[in-house]
Length: 173
Image (cartoon, rainbow, N blue to C red; front, side):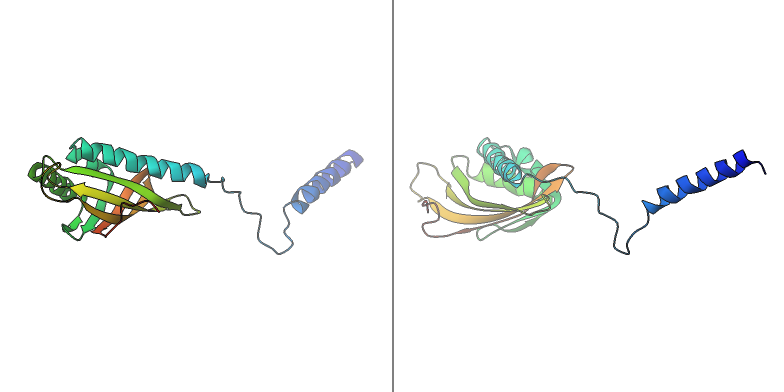
Protein backbone atom coordinates (compact mmCIF):
# COMPACT_ATOMS: atom_id res chain seq x y z
CA UNK A 1 0.00 0.00 0.00
CA UNK A 2 1.46 3.35 -0.95
CA UNK A 3 1.67 6.32 1.35
CA UNK A 4 -0.88 8.14 -0.79
CA UNK A 5 -3.37 5.32 -0.49
CA UNK A 6 -2.84 5.17 3.26
CA UNK A 7 -3.29 8.92 3.58
CA UNK A 8 -6.37 8.79 1.36
CA UNK A 9 -7.85 5.98 3.42
CA UNK A 10 -7.15 7.85 6.66
CA UNK A 11 -8.67 11.01 5.22
CA UNK A 12 -11.80 9.11 4.21
CA UNK A 13 -12.08 7.46 7.63
CA UNK A 14 -11.56 10.83 9.32
CA UNK A 15 -14.22 12.45 7.19
CA UNK A 16 -16.66 9.67 7.95
CA UNK A 17 -15.89 9.91 11.68
CA UNK A 18 -16.50 13.66 11.71
CA UNK A 19 -19.70 13.21 9.72
CA UNK A 20 -20.96 10.46 11.99
CA UNK A 21 -20.10 12.45 15.10
CA UNK A 22 -22.68 14.99 14.04
CA UNK A 23 -25.28 12.23 13.87
CA UNK A 24 -24.47 10.63 17.20
CA UNK A 25 -27.06 11.39 19.82
CA UNK A 26 -26.43 12.06 23.48
CA UNK A 27 -29.10 9.47 24.25
CA UNK A 28 -32.02 11.90 23.93
CA UNK A 29 -34.57 12.02 21.19
CA UNK A 30 -33.60 13.67 17.93
CA UNK A 31 -34.91 17.18 17.60
CA UNK A 32 -38.47 17.17 16.33
CA UNK A 33 -39.28 18.90 13.10
CA UNK A 34 -40.75 22.26 13.98
CA UNK A 35 -44.48 22.38 13.38
CA UNK A 36 -45.71 25.41 11.49
CA UNK A 37 -47.25 27.95 13.84
CA UNK A 38 -51.02 28.17 13.59
CA UNK A 39 -52.51 31.64 13.58
CA UNK A 40 -55.38 31.02 15.99
CA UNK A 41 -56.79 34.53 15.51
CA UNK A 42 -56.96 33.98 11.75
CA UNK A 43 -58.61 30.57 12.25
CA UNK A 44 -61.14 32.13 14.64
CA UNK A 45 -62.00 34.74 12.03
CA UNK A 46 -62.31 32.02 9.37
CA UNK A 47 -64.81 30.14 11.58
CA UNK A 48 -66.78 33.36 12.11
CA UNK A 49 -66.90 33.86 8.33
CA UNK A 50 -68.21 30.32 7.80
CA UNK A 51 -71.00 31.16 10.24
CA UNK A 52 -71.79 34.38 8.34
CA UNK A 53 -71.92 32.42 5.06
CA UNK A 54 -74.18 29.82 6.64
CA UNK A 55 -76.63 32.54 7.75
CA UNK A 56 -76.58 34.10 4.27
CA UNK A 57 -77.39 30.73 2.69
CA UNK A 58 -80.19 30.09 5.18
CA UNK A 59 -81.71 33.53 4.65
CA UNK A 60 -81.49 32.97 0.88
CA UNK A 61 -83.43 29.73 1.42
CA UNK A 62 -80.60 27.65 -0.10
CA UNK A 63 -81.02 24.26 1.60
CA UNK A 64 -78.32 22.61 -0.55
CA UNK A 65 -75.88 25.40 0.30
CA UNK A 66 -76.64 24.97 4.00
CA UNK A 67 -76.05 21.24 3.71
CA UNK A 68 -72.70 21.84 2.00
CA UNK A 69 -71.54 23.67 5.14
CA UNK A 70 -71.59 20.32 7.00
CA UNK A 71 -69.30 17.31 6.90
CA UNK A 72 -71.00 14.26 5.38
CA UNK A 73 -71.66 12.70 8.81
CA UNK A 74 -72.65 16.00 10.46
CA UNK A 75 -75.70 16.45 12.64
CA UNK A 76 -78.02 19.04 14.13
CA UNK A 77 -80.01 18.94 17.34
CA UNK A 78 -82.75 21.34 18.37
CA UNK A 79 -85.44 21.42 21.01
CA UNK A 80 -88.03 22.01 18.30
CA UNK A 81 -86.73 19.79 15.50
CA UNK A 82 -84.98 16.95 17.29
CA UNK A 83 -81.90 15.18 15.89
CA UNK A 84 -81.04 15.27 12.19
CA UNK A 85 -78.10 13.09 11.13
CA UNK A 86 -76.12 13.28 7.89
CA UNK A 87 -75.75 15.94 5.23
CA UNK A 88 -78.58 14.62 3.03
CA UNK A 89 -81.01 14.64 5.97
CA UNK A 90 -79.89 18.16 6.92
CA UNK A 91 -80.64 19.36 3.37
CA UNK A 92 -84.07 17.69 3.43
CA UNK A 93 -84.97 19.02 6.88
CA UNK A 94 -83.75 22.52 6.01
CA UNK A 95 -85.74 22.53 2.77
CA UNK A 96 -88.90 21.36 4.59
CA UNK A 97 -88.42 24.00 7.29
CA UNK A 98 -87.92 26.79 4.73
CA UNK A 99 -90.92 25.64 2.64
CA UNK A 100 -93.16 25.35 5.72
CA UNK A 101 -92.35 28.88 6.89
CA UNK A 102 -91.67 31.00 3.77
CA UNK A 103 -92.12 34.26 5.71
CA UNK A 104 -89.81 33.25 8.55
CA UNK A 105 -87.18 35.71 9.69
CA UNK A 106 -84.03 34.21 11.21
CA UNK A 107 -80.86 35.75 12.54
CA UNK A 108 -77.91 34.51 14.57
CA UNK A 109 -74.43 35.49 15.63
CA UNK A 110 -71.41 34.30 17.53
CA UNK A 111 -70.71 35.31 21.10
CA UNK A 112 -67.51 33.31 21.42
CA UNK A 113 -65.28 31.15 19.21
CA UNK A 114 -62.62 28.81 20.55
CA UNK A 115 -60.05 27.19 18.24
CA UNK A 116 -57.94 24.22 19.34
CA UNK A 117 -54.17 24.70 19.39
CA UNK A 118 -54.00 22.10 16.59
CA UNK A 119 -56.02 24.46 14.39
CA UNK A 120 -58.37 21.72 13.15
CA UNK A 121 -61.23 21.91 15.64
CA UNK A 122 -63.31 24.88 16.77
CA UNK A 123 -66.35 25.50 18.94
CA UNK A 124 -68.66 28.47 18.56
CA UNK A 125 -71.27 29.66 21.06
CA UNK A 126 -73.88 32.16 20.03
CA UNK A 127 -77.43 33.48 19.98
CA UNK A 128 -80.27 33.09 17.49
CA UNK A 129 -83.69 34.57 16.88
CA UNK A 130 -86.48 33.17 14.78
CA UNK A 131 -89.93 34.36 13.88
CA UNK A 132 -91.63 31.67 11.84
CA UNK A 133 -94.35 33.95 10.46
CA UNK A 134 -92.23 37.08 10.01
CA UNK A 135 -94.35 40.14 10.75
CA UNK A 136 -97.32 37.89 11.65
CA UNK A 137 -98.92 37.34 15.04
CA UNK A 138 -96.58 34.65 16.37
CA UNK A 139 -93.88 36.00 18.68
CA UNK A 140 -90.17 35.85 17.97
CA UNK A 141 -88.28 33.05 19.69
CA UNK A 142 -84.78 33.60 21.07
CA UNK A 143 -82.22 30.93 21.76
CA UNK A 144 -78.60 29.91 21.99
CA UNK A 145 -76.51 27.50 19.98
CA UNK A 146 -73.28 25.57 20.20
CA UNK A 147 -71.56 24.53 16.97
CA UNK A 148 -68.51 22.31 16.51
CA UNK A 149 -66.39 22.90 13.39
CA UNK A 150 -63.68 20.68 11.96
CA UNK A 151 -61.19 21.24 9.17
CA UNK A 152 -61.60 19.13 6.05
CA UNK A 153 -58.95 19.58 3.37
CA UNK A 154 -58.08 22.99 4.79
CA UNK A 155 -61.71 24.18 4.89
CA UNK A 156 -63.87 24.66 8.01
CA UNK A 157 -67.01 22.49 8.02
CA UNK A 158 -69.79 22.04 10.57
CA UNK A 159 -69.56 18.76 12.43
CA UNK A 160 -72.35 19.31 14.95
CA UNK A 161 -74.83 22.03 15.77
CA UNK A 162 -77.21 22.20 18.73
CA UNK A 163 -79.71 24.97 19.43
CA UNK A 164 -82.35 25.56 22.05
CA UNK A 165 -84.77 28.36 22.95
CA UNK A 166 -83.55 30.43 25.90
CA UNK A 167 -85.24 33.45 27.43
CA UNK A 168 -83.20 36.62 26.64
CA UNK A 169 -80.65 34.75 24.49
CA UNK A 170 -80.52 37.41 21.75
CA UNK A 171 -79.71 40.12 24.25
CA UNK A 172 -76.13 41.35 24.14
CA UNK A 173 -73.88 40.49 27.08
